[in-house]
Image 1 (tube, rainbow, N blue to C red):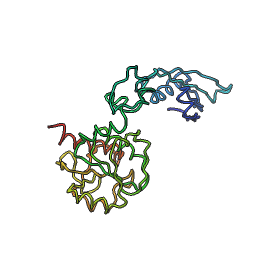
Image 2 (image 1 turned 135 degrees about the vertical axis):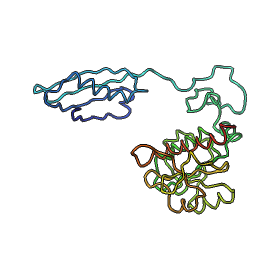
Image 3 (image 1 turned 90 degrees about the vertical axis):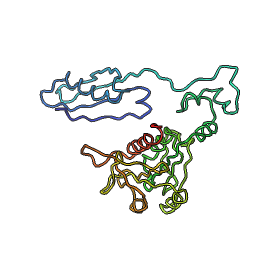
Image 4 (image 1 turned 45 degrees about the horizontal axis):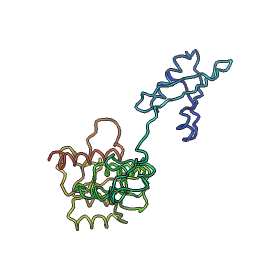
Length: 279
């Protein structure tokens, strides 16, 4: 049985720069200290990259009565530099290059082919070959998952991302990928539905509710917009009533649903399998 443990959290900056944290453990009666340290260190390895980071474990103090143990767990990571440094001269020519990035380096989250390119040039290149699929998200609660969905949409080069409800959405998970996307805001579900009708685009709601059809057995329309709700409440009744199809992702475990950011990635990839990857 693992003893009760209290984690003393450092600031995020300290954790990243010093790569350690402290654990104060209340020992059970007749606890074997060596096994305890190894158990805690094994659990802490989950914080490492890929679970393979080497760990150094040091017992700082053990009080005379043997009731408490203080452990310092240090995690060492290999240095990994993301991006490229300043470009050696002579610099490459072309309007798509950003002089500031050529001068100072490019550490953005972009493919190597886009290194040193301006944001506008990258977006223009993506616009020239976007897929037909659109994605929509209901934003009534400032859901943290919206950024994740936008980032996935960027990875698959989705045509448009629609945000329904609040104009401001949590961009943290997007990792700045929204700069390269076309994002359209709709104040209401009615506004969104009317625009989709004018484009003759099928509204496909993705939600695990009674009556939804299994997505693996559904032929998704080529000209579709996959719509996702907030984490927890799912899609609104108004949106579901206006969807041409409601699909669900099959599950085999005990949880009621998968995270909406995960669900969006799965649904987008299934559309890609049907319309892009099989061509």
